[in-house]
Image (cartoon, rainbow, N blue to C red; front, top):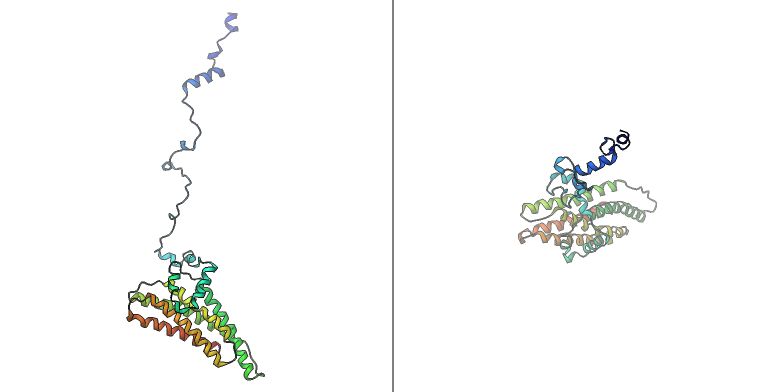
Length: 263
């Protein structure tokens, strides 16, 4: 009796750690290594972070909502200084007629916005300066005041011309069956205004005869630039009247600038 109590078979006691470990090792399944692949698939409620593809989240280009989205126009301002300078220089050589080919792959609205804005402030300020010089030349004792209305007229005329005239020619050529682009038209007419910025600095000369020579040369150059490049979109010689009308309108703009701001 004493021997049976002194050496009990502890291997079968419930609280014996060795017995539990031994039996678990015999009955439990093999250990699965910790891996993210043991989680349930996506169909059971879990999601994996996957980088979106380059074009998977883009909105369709023909969505009408894109017309009112600022992000839709960012591609037309994707130009650097070298490209802008090259196009500005091309606008000063109207007889080349290769401006359309330069903007075909990447037309921009940068020129339309900044050239038009610069021209508005230039003709408004220099127009007042020219008026002052002319008044002082005719009568040194005459009183003179800065005319703020020049700025309103300049903004309305230049912005209206740069936006509405290309839009009108776009719809006209579309109606006549030509494949044209409104953005390219805006780009063309925008850069055509650059020469008026340069001529405006010469129009402050208080000699009327020289002013008319300067503005007619600048207007003829700008009109030739528009007419010759617009001819690239005309398929038939019967439509040459369209390019001629654009020439006349551009020349009319130059005369308007002279008559209103540098009279």
